[in-house]
Length: 302
Image (cartoon, rainbow, N blue to C red; front, top):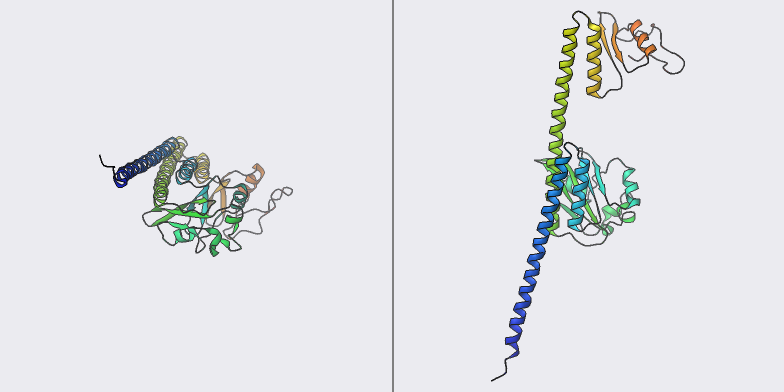
C-alpha cells in the first residue's frame, strides 16, 4: 500500500479546523445575541416598574450598554436645543465625575462626539481622544487627563427630526468599537427615546387629571358657598399654587382705580393683613404705607 500524501492529510485537518472555527464564531454570535436580548428585557422590566421615572431607566441602559460594548464608563445626555445636559453618569472615574458634576451642561464643541451628533450624524467615533485637537484643547482635555478616556463613541437620541439627547461611552484604551457594538448602542438609544416619550405622555396625562380635579374641587366650593367669594378665591389660589408649584400667590380684584387683595397665600399673616388693608394703584401707589416689620420684609411687592 502506497503512503498517503501529506496533502490528503492536511486538507481534512484544515477542514476540521475551519469547521471548529465557524462553530465557535456561531456560538459567540449566539451568545452575544442572547446577552443583548437579556439586557433589553431587563431594561424593559425597569421601564415597566418605573412608570414616568427616567433616572433608573437611564442607569440600567447605560450599565447594560457598557457591559455589552466593553466600555469603561459612559454618559446619557439630554439636549435642550443648545447644550447637552448629563441625565445619567455610570462608572465614571471619580476625578472626571467631580469635574462633570461641577458643570450643568456640556457644549457641542466642533470635532467632538457631541458636536458631530448635534450636526446630524447617525453616530460618531473618535479612535483616540489623546490625538484629537478637539479633545486636547485647554477646555476639554479633562476627558483624557482626569477620565483616562481614549476611544469614544456616541449615538443620538432622536424622535423623527428632533434631537433629544445622546449616549456616549468611553474606553480607556485606543480600541475601536465594532459595528455590532455601535448597533447595540443605537438599540439602547431607541429604547431611551421610547422611555422619554412614555414619561412625557404620563406627565401630561397626570397634569391634565390634576387640573380637572382641581377645577372640580373649585366648582364644588362655588356651589357650596353661594354669594360668598372669599372661600372661592382661597380655593382657586390654593389650587393654582399647587398646580404651578408656586411658593406663594395673591388674587386681586380691581375696582376701576385700585387693586384689592382678595386672597393671599404663603406669606406671613401680618404681611397678608397689610396687603388686604392697603389697596394699590395700577402703577404702584408710592404714597401708600410700606410694610416694614423689622427687617423681615421692607417693601411691598406689586
